[in-house]
Length: 129
Length: 179
Image (cartoon, rainbow over all chains, first blue to last red; front, side):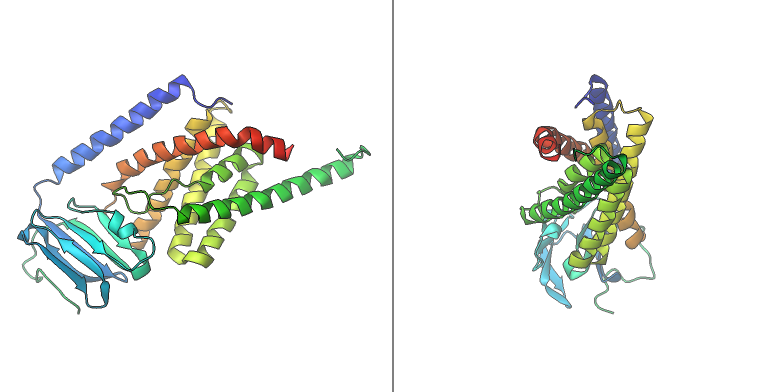
């Protein structure tokens, strides 16, 4: 059994190219849609934030004061601080594209970017229940 | 090997060897996974990406011991993760492990053993990532995974090459120990 064959390079190149192209296409397609961030605690939707608000603020859930979110003017949101051991949530970086998400599993907090049309019936921010 | 040439004893001894080796490999897989958990996380913008060093052990098992042993190690490792890190992590480990072994076996079978280490490893790593992602999207229903799919594929290519490279380097030493 060989370590690597010449045809492998072609297969790898095709796989990489297809992935990069699909990221590009996805980013273009979702570019102009309204973007919201949803914050879940133990699978329950706690907050919906309109990322186009253009404000810069730090906040956290009442139930998880150690987990601090940072929303920026240019429409991104990230886990800024957390008391979890692995910091996977912070490493996920700033999110702004629909479909991106970051999770802090030790705290049961999930941050999700969604794209949806504004629903007149629902308030644009729900805190607690 | 055992000097008396009896077929019965030979078979028993071979089975014992396989059993012992599988147990050892399982232990190594757990230790490697624990050690990897102590390393600082890779700063990439995809949640939970790891090199998956214990895949080296699983790959070795697939190549040199057999499918049954590989699945066994994978399931036991998922149980270990379940006990130490909780249900979600356990489910992720199981889905990733089982799918990756299955895909590697398919690649080896379809290519009639002609697939390279690198290609087998890459297909295993990609399917490992996809298996985990299927579980994540099942747990958090409605999670849109299309943004991450290409990133996970790229990550699989990189980590697959890396683990295949490491296996290649340590293989002579391992073979010396095992023979």
